[in-house]
Length: 442
Image (cartoon, rainbow, N blue to C red; front, side, top):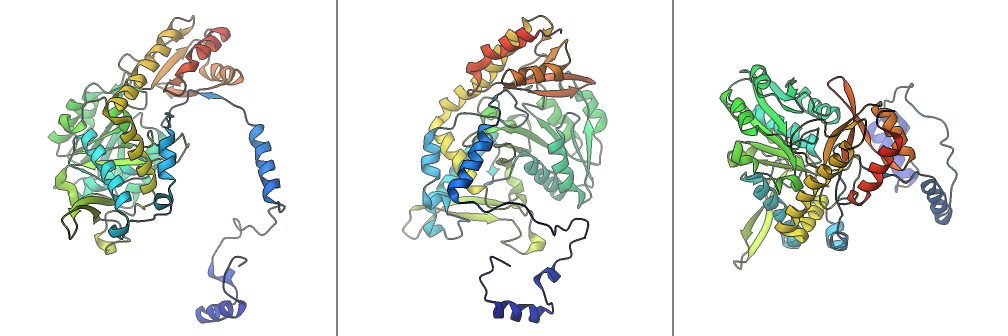
């Protein structure tokens, strides 16, 4: 107990009260995982620790990333840091006391309003951990609101494992099954979906852009298939893509989930920010918290936490979610970035996500032994690239040349995946030259 603030006599009194002699007796840690050795970490001064860390970082390879795969790097304007790092934002936890948290509450209300406008749906919360947890909450919501029985959520067979695993964790306890429907040519196979849906289906999920970077062309048909079987239709996307695409509510989405950390956050490789929007009739089933606008005693516009459905706030048996509150500050950053860009700036950024990957694919397709993109259709940020040489070998060569690319297994073949945003588009020429120098058919 090296960091306990209690003097020894207080510790002894507490241990006596619970009937144990040692704090370790409070924990049942199996021997096979118990660590009883020495970490071997010597004490360092601040200066020594900084020097050691800088030495490790200096030895890291500096790669230009064309990775994508759910983590997208867009330039974050300095105003986001300057405002979000103010102490009244950075030190705020949950805005329980609206009279001293109006600024933060207003920013969260703007975040919700931003998501509502992009999704076309009536309700948005503030906020979710990431796309995967938002999808998990959508599955739980579908099981609560569906009027008939059912216990299956359908997702595309191309859904990334990292998202599916979170979804399965969410649905395991309530006994909701996760099953797949087929894709063809990189997008939803509507007839295959129709064959997969039945009376047991609670929710049908489809993403645009999807895991292959393609914009789904037949989402209205997907919505019809879901609704014909009394299932909810959930669309996955992100706030930059939605600024250019048709609002999902217009083609029948009941729930919209996705990623908001593409604004306001640098690439974090795990840290995210999710969005969750739904039809207004599901208001009482929305996970997390909602900020609402009201009036104070003087008649001035004021903001407050209108609805909180997480178990810390209300009786546990009535809670819909255990989503926590540390995402509020990340949502604040997204709101600041969105406000800074404005509607025109958001559309400009989204259009660059379309033209950038199209430009790279066109350049790569001119090379011998390279075919890009693999699938016909409109792409957003990402696309798959076929090479005569093994994709893994090409990726290894490109890493040696200073570029980081993923490989993706799809339909029994392995492809390179490329991702272009405003932060790496100026290196397209260099990447194309590196692929050309290797030779796609080697």
